[in-house]
Length: 366
Ligand code: MRU
Image 1 (cartoon, rainbow, N blue to C red):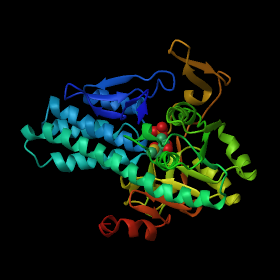
Image 2: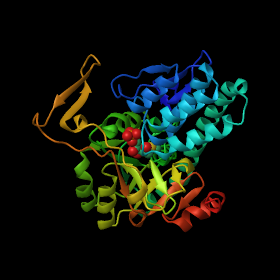
Image 3: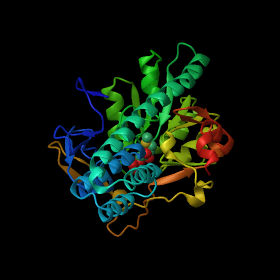
Image 4: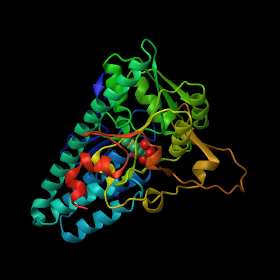
């Protein structure tokens, strides 16, 4: 995507041909700064500290983390260590484990001397594939948005989104935001209601930044406003991303997604989830029982974090000093609340038959 006239991806091989350049997302929306990852530890830290975040981008960063490890030491013990270290960074997004499994399958059969070059090539391929998937999600989602817009000609189309499932969460384009970018480019009068997405405010900091940089009209709302807006007839469609979908079509996404899906159902607002194949976990059926939900530090709830006018990170306490806080970072939206799943292969019903029809090769391998 373009920032100040230059095209960026969220992750790319640096000019030195071995380190990896990322956008430091903890500094957005105030400072756009690139950072270099030089080692496995750098990559793991970037994922843990959410310098990079978003399911597809976490997967690509892990793949490059393996490549960085192979450059230092391509031996079997080093490969195993890379898998364990990166695999333990964040639990919910299945893209991480999918990317690591793909790296392991590619590298394990090779002689150590051949591993580093192949690891970089595979990480690059995973990144390219993600870009192509997101572009196709954009095209399929565009058709849906066009159909919805045709119902009320001459009026703007109001989309509600939660968290950040844009290009910053992927390598380019995004998942949930890709159809919005495509619609905007197609001349559709699209407007986005952006949930702030407490506690880390990915909506306020990242989605608002992305949409603004792309010239897409948006309105930032607090997390609890969506239900009210739906009751008032101000939302035409909800469109969110996902960190892991089950074979049966349940999806995990940023905490609060489930409540939006409930409100959407109560108000007859279509609720779509956009995701690439790498977010589908074919090994599980029951999202509530089987998707691991990340629990994050209580401090993210008891404090508000931001940057001061000099770009320094600051935190302000908003709860009593002895407050107990819980911070589950994701929730599960059951398939029955989802109108459809937009993938790179088309739009599926949120159930096993729907997903299996799009991915016969994956479902047959179960
Ligand atoms: O905790 P985060 O910022 O990594 O959570 C990101 C989300 O929940 C996104 O909606 C999800 O990864 C889909 S991204 C295309």
